[in-house]
Structures are given as C-alpha cells and as structure tokens.
Amino acid sequence: MRVIRPIDRVRAVTPTLGSAIRMASAAFRREAWLAALGLLVTGARRASSWPAIWAAWGLVLRAAVAAAAQRPLQLTAPLEGALAMATSPSFLGIVGGLWLAGAVLSGALRVAWASGALPVLGAAMAGDPRGAHGFADGLAGGFVRVLPAAVLGFVLELSGALFGLTLALAAAVLAGRGEGLAAALGVSAAVAAALTLALAVPLALSTAADALVARSATLREPLADTVVGVTRRFLARPGAFLLGALVFGLLGVAAQLSIQVAGGVATGFTRGVPAAVAMGPRLMLGALSALVAGVIDLVWLGTLAVMSCGRARSEPGAALAGR
Image (cartoon, rainbow, N blue to C red; front, side, top):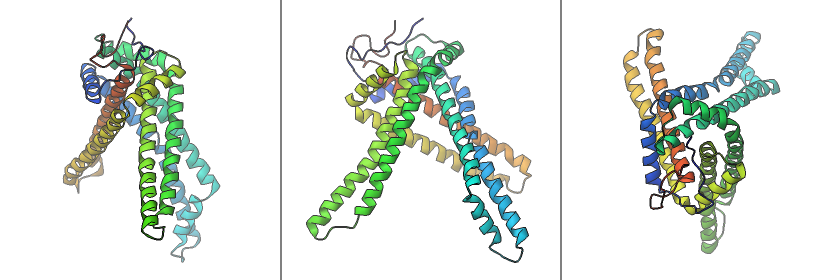
C-alpha cells in the first residue's frame, strides 16, 4: 500500500501556495464524495453547541417568569430574575459544562474528519485513489496519532489568543500617552507594533496548529517529527502559510455572508406562510452553509498537507513522495 513518507530529513522544500491549492482542489474533485460526509461532520459540530444554548435560554426564561410571578407589580422583576440566574454559580456550572462537552465533541469530530479525509486526499494526489475504504483505514489508524497533534494545536491557539489579547490591552493602555512630538511618535510606533503582533502571532499559531493536524493525518510519524517538520516548512515559507490562512479565512466569511444574503432574499418570499412551510428553505440554507464550510475547511487542510509534507515541483520526485 502506498503511503506518503516524510522528506524533511533530506531537505525541506515547501511547495508554493498556488500549487498546493491546485493540488488540494484537484484531489477533492477526484474524491468529491467527501463533500457529503463533510456536510454531516460540519452539521454535527455546529449542533454540539446547541444543548448549552438551549439550557442557557431555558434557565434564564424560567427565572424571569418565576420572578414576574412573585413580584407582578414590579416591572424590572423579570430582568432582575434573569440577571440573578445568569450570574449564579449553578447556571455557570451547567451551561459551562454543556459548552465544554460540546467543544470537546466538536474537536473530536474534526480530528476524526481530518484523520480519515486527509489520507484519501493524499492518496488521490499521489495517483492512488482509495475511496471510502481509505477513509475508514485512515480513521481507524490515524485518530490516535492525530489527537495529540490536535491537543498541541489547541494549546498553541489558546496561547496565541492570550498573547494577542494581552498586547491589545497593552496597546489600549499606551494609546494617547506621551507628551511632546518625539514621545507621541514613540508611543504610536509601539502601539502599532503591538497591534500588528496581536494580529499576526495568533494567526501564525493557528495556522501552525492546523498544519500539525494536516501533517499528522497524512504522515505516519512520531509527534516530535511532526512538530519539527511543520516548523521547518513554516519557517521556510511563512508568508505562504499566513497568506493561505487569510485567503481561506476571507473565502469562508465571504461564502457565509453570500449564503446569508441570498437566504434573506429567498426566505423573504415566505412571509405569511405557515412556520412548517418556511422551515424547509431555512433547513436548506443551513445545509448549504454547512456544506460550503466543510468543503473550504477540507481544501484548506489539504493545502496545508501539501505545504507541510510535499515537495516543490522543481524537485525530483515532485509533489507527494510515496513508496
């Protein structure tokens, strides 16, 4: 069976962003059935947060109704009851626990999705398509290997978010300080540098986290080798990784906004019809949104797999080396 082997021990030659996107897109077209599975995974990941949302609304509304019944002559009673419930330890424990469980489930689903789908894309790029059998084999043999990389990626993303928040708060404190032209210019430069780092560092760490997942799902190697390989590839061409993250991030936002706008126009004709009839178009829009999000995420992970594992086309044995 052909597998993709690491080549970083020889020489790290990162493919360009354009070639990586073309390879990932071509592989996805060959394995287009993954779109249907991606729809299910994306929908399940979105639904994992619903219990926490429903529990929060239910508890708050119940407290508001109870407060209004106890003090019917006080207009602010429902608001006070809702606020008391929202700030109570029991509310925070219940909703926080449900949210945490949903987040863990969502993360596990993404790990399972990457573990099965990326080997299928990698095999399609190498000219050895495996289909659904390859997905099952990748999921069975890769989940345990990808999970530590995903946990490490979560730590990186969390660290980047805290770093960015700290710098943003520091920039807010420094803004407007400094007496005199020279001091004002120095403070402005410091604030600009802090804000730039507050945006660039979290983006870089988030991209590295996705690259860790992509490489660990594609290559059968220890986690330490995965970290070293991703670090080499990222440092060899950081601009390509960051530009790819921006491109796919903006593409995802633009796609979702377009769907929302088109959905608003389409559902505008359903005003006045029964709720059961209007639910159909809404469900279709939700499914389309999940489908598009799943496809964009898969192509992005495939692009990262090429950039973190493949050879540049100018090298002998270009693209994904196999044996």
